[in-house]
Image 1: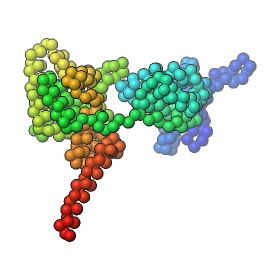
Image 2 (image 1 turned 180 degrees about the horizontal axis):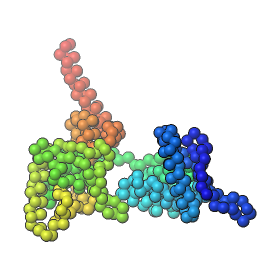
Image 3 (image 1 turned 90 degrees about the horizontal axis):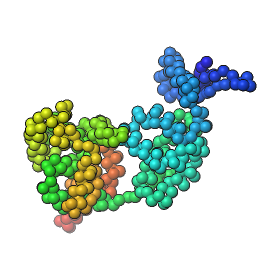
Image 4 (image 1 turned 135 degrees about the vertical axis):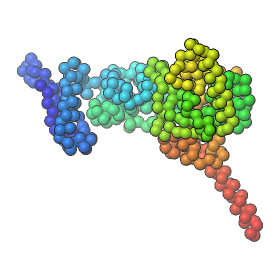
Length: 396
């Protein structure tokens, strides 16, 4: 027998009865759920239907033995619940894989067998300290483990497995701050890169040129198709990306955010390279004949059979290229930062840069490039000061 009853303004108690125990006492399981949808609360039939569905799911969990009382649930057991009911639907395949990696390698070996309510802020502080001092992990790795834990416990709080998110009481660890000059190239270095690339395959010349001139993310570059290029207007439409998904499988997905879908104008010199690569790919397809596998997409960056490059291929090539050519190494993603820094130094407005990079909000641009923008602003003030100083001298 199963039933539900109202407990508060928007909370309901689900009850599943399992008969009587050996002492003749009623054996039942209960679960409290909250409904925040005001429209649902005001519509009796829809509310009843929703509660019946929740009650049915709860009953199936109890009768199948899957239900565990929140106060008895270990973190390892809750993580399975979190993955099934939240992570698989709300996280991208690549992010889920990364979260699971941190859970399996760092978090569950320490906290897996502890019950949720047993984990306190002190345990988290000791854990983060151990990652940093004993295991010698980077600040960004420690920070990521904190992020994963906080996400898991936030779901536990929302679903009332715990009364509070204890992770939120612990300050977010700091990652090492790299100096701006360390993770971008200056103009002289970029000139050296272009010169070194003259002997490299055409597709890599185009790939790196687009990263530097347009700030495209690696996955956005990989997902470029020739029908996304407006040859007359020198523009490229960014509306998809190729990323690593679950178990390393390549996945074609929507851009990182809504505003990541954008149209970017490309310098004329880069467009000439694009046209050369397009013509080269057309010949490649013609010569391949039956060997050509890709029928649906015309990838700009493709293998000899027309299939797109694997997501990590550009990163591997970039590291080897910088080693071969004795070029100061920065991450491939930092070419995007180099592009933004060049635009800032040229006096381009932050709003334009934000749209060109596909940031969800201009505040992301301001936060990411705050120091560079501040330096550019100071330079602008100095130039204005020179103008006004000359004016005062003329008027004196």
